[in-house]
Length: 525
Image (cartoon, rainbow, N blue to C red; front, side, top):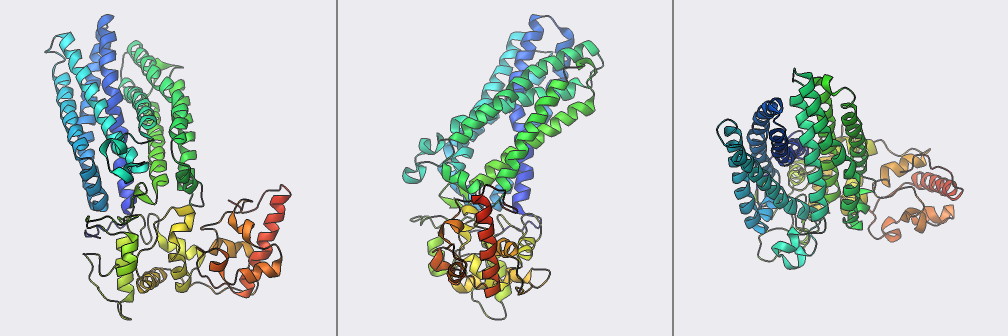
């Protein structure tokens, strides 16, 4: 609310994902790759393997170019992107962890300095001193990851920091150690995966075979322990977070499944490199790297998805509104905006009043302020498709906006603002539909009614509230659906037609009987 909105046409969240995933894929290599360099050099010198040392010198150039140049530039790109997409969250992270960031920047300076000296010293430094530069690099890189891990995990599981705002309380949060172990294992695997790339272009078949086998010793065991570390990580995440992730919003579950599949594929591909290591082609090593990138990206998508609706857990929503009032901070909480409104609070709006003529323009500005951090109109997480699929008209959209925070198992922030502002946002969202919604037909289909009006919050399973509280008698159930807020206090005040209510009750009862009899539920989630 305190900052202008940066419009990203294809979706701010997608831009952040692309920048972050590429940076993370390289920055984790920077940690594991540093240890790979120094241990490989030590083994090569002990065995007087001049060919391996020659390859390692070339690999060091590749390593430094990728981690120091691309890694540093993409790291700056992350700061630039998050500062424009979510300036309030960025400000909070800087103020809460300013000394953490300062220490991390010191370690990063040591890291890049040691990397450059390690590259420079291949033909100029005594072997022992050269390896010391490698160890200094690795320890600095690992320390940098350990500090950033504390801040990143704090954003998911802020723990008791909300109560006391103490540095170490938030830093050593519940997911800190499992996340650090998980990420370090990934970095070791990536060290071997990146080594396959430079090994695959070697002409010496014997040397290539030695490098591929050595790389596999980094990849295979690291990937083998990832499921155990992942389970440890999952066990430390509060049940309320997983409840949101397992709801009707499929992002987390879809990418979790994809991460598991791609991890298994990466593991198998790494094993296949051992069949004929002396003949490993560049195309195959690139395929291993791309699948590993997909695995890493899927994991990051899961981590981001389960954090919703917050950007800092239970404290700051993804749209930069605070979950509770912040004394003397200048920030805006949901309760405050409900009282005074968005138009009188947001500092970068063109319209301060709603009229019949400017309602759509006001609704668009409210969309930019409250929704654009996660949604676009017709691209990434586009609402045009979402609304058109459910055939919502303006009245139905307005009713749904009143209970945003219970939709998709609480994966979205509540709407903050006055009733007239909610009506303006509903008018704008209704205007982006490609076609006008069709009225309910006399022969309404129960499943269609459910998907259009109920599936955002309810799932067809025995423990869902729709089964538990809806009367079994068809006529009683139909009457109960006349006043949804009376049935469930947080239900939107939808006015279903007689035909819709009758069709919905008949279909739900059919599904309930099928579940009772142990049969599969067609169309159920």
